[in-house]
Image 1: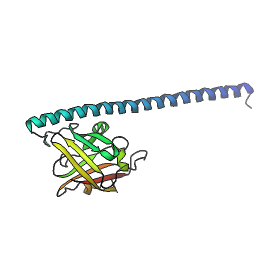
Image 2 (image 1 turned 180 degrees about the vertical axis):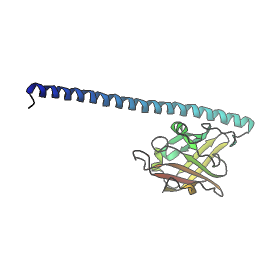
Image 3 (image 1 turned 90 degrees about the vertical axis):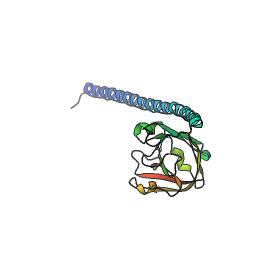
Image 4 (image 1 turned 135 degrees about the horizontal axis):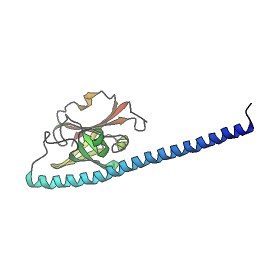
Length: 203
């Protein structure tokens, strides 16, 4: 039979455990929020720096008329800027699709033409950061890509949901096309099971 003193001791231990558990959750939550805030702040500052880099490239191109070749583009290099006026979206396009690159901007998919070149240009981005606005895109919306060599305008043809392994969306185009890819569903927690694809043709 448990005495009153022992019950009080168990109750005190339980209260002590609950207090430390609450503190642990509070500290963990605070650290997670701080990490997200720092990551977003870093990405914002990087976007400003990338925009300055693009402006410098434009001025250099005006003087020399020499574009960035595919072989010269390295992972993380600034290739241009993509904007969707109706959605108020504007973000730097970087070379490559590594995790680090996609934390800082959207990435040009290797093996597809560089932005502004003929063919089917592929660009990928995270659904919970730079490409979140794609959930509201519509057919006939205009997409603009600014590079050192000029401003290229595209019009959205269709939006489609595909499985991750569907490489047909990036097949070469006879003319000039643009394919944007992000994960789907947009509000899915964890590794999303599908891909959200926006296809557009050059105007």
